Image (cartoon, rainbow, N blue to C red; front, side):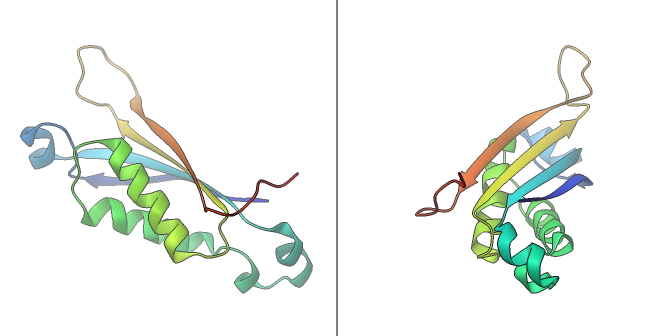
Length: 125
């Protein structure tokens, strides 16, 4: 089972250049979190799954309180924070998009999608 959060937007101060870090940009973050469906679907208890509100808050905190040069590093920090903070998560897929990035061509967004799996946890069959 996957718990997801889509379209978390914020203004943050990441970027390769000093100017990007000073001015900041709008970012959009999407999360897809693999958890066991057996207990979550049978108990109806939030403690048996991942609270997507808390997962979104963690992603927001990591993105807004850190300053990195690349979206790859940011996505990695968010994914690791999710795995560290939620033992129920077997796999975290994090997508970070910089909206209207400063480029020679006009695009809606550019970014990265990263998947990080908890070590020792097998993929469901």
